[in-house]
Picture 1 (cartoon, chains in turn brown, red):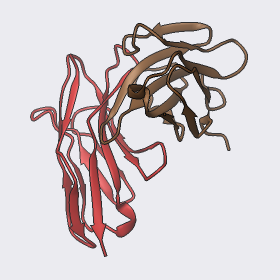
Picture 2: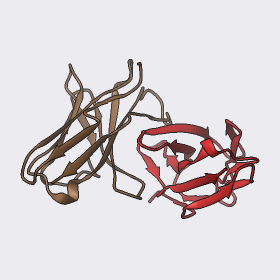
Picture 3: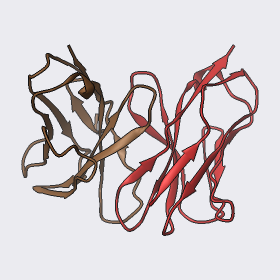
Length: 115
Length: 112
């Protein structure tokens, strides 16, 4: 499967624990985007990364949330000290990035449930 | 700022009915416009796109025309099938940055 790969598909955490969500972009794609989808709502942009750089994190909460896209390995979205309101589906997308207006290719998402 | 507004759902139709899902946008530049579809339990899939005014995007019997004068990109299909049941998202991408702005989505139910 050459698409965007996210894991795990489902993640359950108790309040106060940490959640780590992983995203491997499509082969040849160097740009990664994270979105959050609350029930019955659209996708909200969180953060845009290129290899080793955060380009735009304007949609990411200032506290408890962080993202990285190292030179080697997948992109990681990390949520510390999770709370009930963090329950959502988190989607990753990737694009080649050389030109504007490239439609982003999405993974199947990680569904995070906070007990 | 850029934004996308699409008709609220759910929309329920019988098989073979005509479908329209309205979408309008506001943008400061010259955006590209997209329709994405999300089937239950899956991520978003690009359905069709249009990159400039008067372009028509089409795929799987769906089509949408980029109307700059009305800032609209309505999705249409002449005869829907049960398998078209999903959530449809209208979106835009501003060439000034690589973010895609999504509408809230419209849930479509097709009855056999």
